Length: 512
Image 1 (spheres, rainbow, N blue to C red):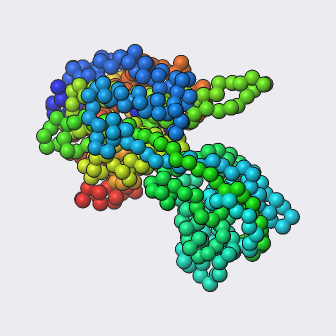
Image 2: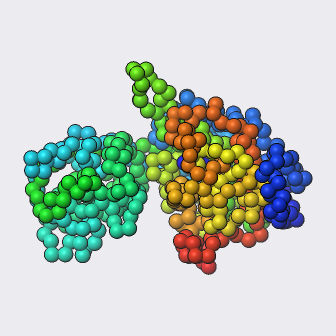
Image 3: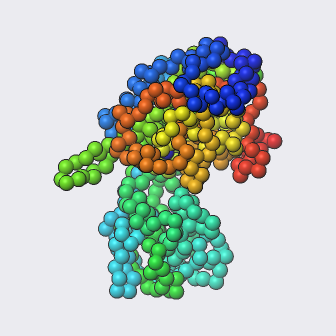
């Protein structure tokens, strides 16, 4: 996905209490001039040329799709950092020259492994994928242990020297990331009990095996937080296609053979980019609002058509050069006229390969999490309505009035919770902050549903700067900056809605 003098209290209240009738008129009319109070602010004079130049550079062919771990990604990171420097942002402790280093493992897929069951030989990348482990040539009996996550699953079973067979994932798990996380725990427990490998039977109706095999047949990236984590798992770990129950016999004790050269991996350096605009209020400046957006994208492809190479670069103008452009305009405008609270501008890497940058930041924060009152993230698949911004989590995260007021000033409406069937709240970088208890909506370009206008560009090589409406991009950026300012100037902290699934962890974080 993509994402993104101090106002007097009187001005804030005036913006926040505009009538619904006025909001309706604004959404339908041509973009108005900003109201008098907002017209004096730096965000009111953001220009189309400014946002276009940032976006065109970040989404240029020369950056080769900004894939994490590749030179184009690091070039984008340098560009963002130097913009922060030019605006006078302060580099937080732990971010040398605005760079928070992230140690990653780059794991190359295993393509020439085999798994033999009776007279059938399964091939890596087709009927199974190697998820971990070194080189192995083994023949062993299988033992089924349910999900293989607890001592109870192993009760009464001798697994020493045997291959563990499990159901993929864990009870209630529905997303690939959950399956991967549980797999690491299974391998650890199986190795402790003397097993020689783990085979997880993959059968998830909502997730076709073809997509799984395609994904894990590509180079993967993972966070390596210490030397132990940087090493491949000690025993063979496999996901095997059981979508048609074709491997049910493995549950009943079969002798199978596995031949694999093992995974190979290497360290890759990646960075988040972070800069601070110090707050103007002596009491509130020790509280922080984070503004976040990911700057990575998908890199390149090698597809061909009729013998001629097509466009091979995933430029990622919508996803998420547009969002990073909004961060840069926020960095400039908020540094020119500082809000009451401090603001951490955070450009994240690794979103497209597993939300890696945000996950790393959440575990290694540059400002204390309990002093971080809000994250206003930007991400999105694109836009199909240039009269609105869409906010995922608007109704849940306590800053609805500020976000709506800010959009209204720049002639935009706000659409809450677009495409609910997509589960978007938990699919972008905001979720790393939410999981720690920080209210964290995602501020997205305008859309209500995933349709052809979205699909035409989402994760496609057609997502180029030439296809953007830069007049809309300018207003999107202005609304985002103004929303950030209003939230940073709030007299009270935003709160999770009562009963939200993240409310309890939020109360624990803030000691409520």
